[in-house]
Image (cartoon, rainbow, N blue to C red; front, side, top):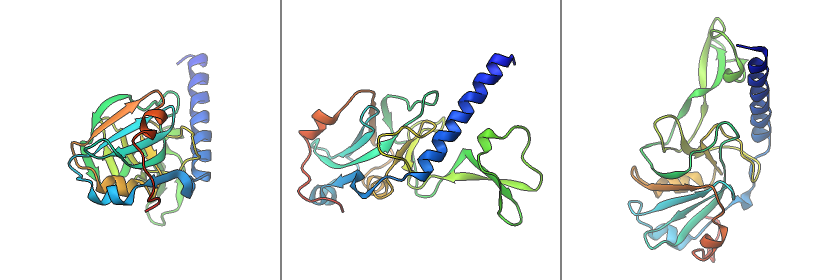
Length: 207
């Protein structure tokens, strides 16, 4: 590897590390989501769909009539790890899931963290350590190469992930319960705020 390529790779890793730290330290707030209680209770999980806007950093859960049941702030992929746009379907659902790729190395006996970010570590795992993947509760897989929706921390309107869609921790369990394997998920690059506003009625707010 040339010095230029090595320095470029190092720079990207440092940037991703900084973004990861900032995203962990600044959680979303309670104003990050809204839900229509009545529509949520009535919604058929087999007939819902999800719309995601990368520009808005928001996601909407809609019922079979196209009405917005729930909307929430999300965080999509950072540059170089962009969330794939287009039409997707939920292909796997797991209430408890850990990342196979991103995590840390901990002491096998004590559980003490040895390497905080495994993706910045070079070479084999430290002796006596085991890999512990990052927790991704209420996992909804969209692609078989590791992209999905799950609970995650992030500052408002900030892209923090390595490609997944991080969702506010109070909203994602509700989305999870009103979707099934096969639920359609449309991810758009542009803004959806105006079109979704016509489909929203949050007279009943915050479940």
